[in-house]
Amino acid sequence: MISIKNPDQLAKMRSAGHLLHDVLCRLREAIQPGVTTKALDAYAEEMIRAHGAIPSFLNYHGYPASICASIEDEVVHGIPSDHVTVENGALLSIDCGLILDGWQADSAFTAAVGNVSEEKRQLVAVTEESFWKGAFMAQNGNRLGDIGHAVQSHAEAHGYGVIRDLTGHGIGRNMHEDPSIPNYGEAGRGVRIRPGMTLAIEPMIALGRWQVHQLADGWTIVTNDHSPCAHYEHTVAVVNAGPPEILTLPGHVWKEAEA
Image: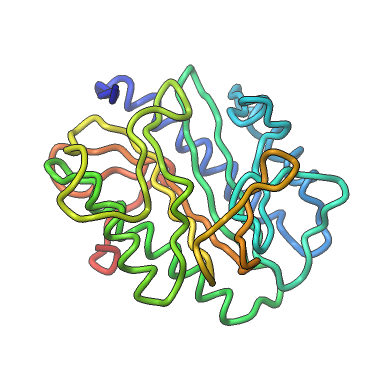
């Protein structure tokens, strides 16, 4: 069942989203060659708890950390470790969520660490562009397939693989709610989008092919061909008219180039 949020509930999700934005901005500043993913995780948890929020990833179905830190061919769910150091030239995807006053926020970005190749930088840029193309379609009266179609069309136009085994999702009191939001699909198909829906839209785009598998740790997802992957996510709220509000990006104003 899809949950429609009222204005008071959206206000609480907005507060959670704005806090998560602040946490991720500071976390991005802490990313540099030589830092361990465990240090980044500890920093994120400290910031979240310092503001009276709860890390929503920690212990979620047994996940052992407050962030997912996925390097290079790791698509999502990379487990932070004292033994994993971020290297110069790598892509590092950070996914993080928090609960504030009972309401969830979820967001992710990929950082190009140090001296990164132009090929990888382009992958990160196109992944972010794919998010904006998809998120723009989260408008009253459209359908979920319009989101996935927009993401897929933009990414595949650049020759990239759109991960199909993992999707975006509804979000609210729970991290994962209905509906699932694939990053591929047919325009005009799927559930009708309505005001008050809150969605975590998150393209995961590979430099190579889209097929993936899970590692023996039971969490980390990697590309089968070991090509690098980028990830970009925001929590959005569907409004009465026009493109959605980006709850995890305070002050955002839609630009023509994002449509």
